[in-house]
Length: 353
Image (cartoon, rainbow, N blue to C red):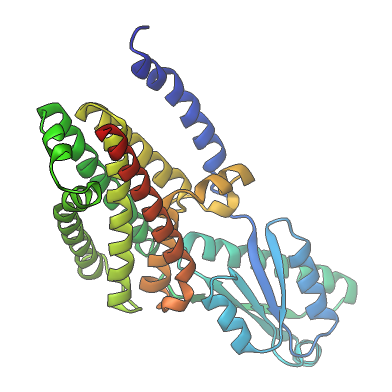
């Protein structure tokens, strides 16, 4: 009872974990963003589109006028599924007894992409049975599934960016969180604070070796992903390194912030491990889709750095996107890093006084 921190962990962690696991873990694929390309609308194409729109699992994002517009929306990450009708769909169905609908799914997340296509296929099959009963005529509506970005449906395409974010977050945070605390325990912190060094210079110097080590870790993970797991690097390698450097700087800044708030290395490791691991696993989109979570958790996930890093890595590494497609993620990561560095410098100055 006298150890308040341990008591908080013992009683508080079960509450936090049951709420996170209860609401964040949702293996159902929901809120599937869908759009339609229908060059010659007719009764059949309109009927199929309406049934998909009315389904609770789909989020209708409108119709597009050209395939180029459809591909651009898919590349920007605005769509999970695109339903493409051919020209003269009804005419082909009536005269030849068969017609095809193409389903383009974003399979950078293979589970979400395949399930989205399966849902749409089931709806189209149900519409076909309904129309055959009304018209008393046999016909066949075929669906052609095309997986974008991950045609082989490898799960490593989804997990590798998440593993990068998790490993770097844990390693970088723990390494730097004990750096300043170690100086306090050894009694050398007072000497550093009393020296002519500015606080920002001291903090930057503490970060440099860990930055180098963390970047080596990132290169090792990237090499293993490419040569062992077969995950491609479809985008710019330099841009991928830039994203990694910013994220590593952010995680190191977070570790330094933790180190200024605690007094013992053990506490620094515990706080770093808990606050770094659970949010990354549960709220970053690494495993569980953020769109499936309640609004409160979706809002909370916005302050989890790994969410933005994983999103940027998937766009560059898997989808082959350029900087213009990840500027938002980069801006958020840089803003978080500057915010944490400001807190660290402010707390260090306060201790100097």
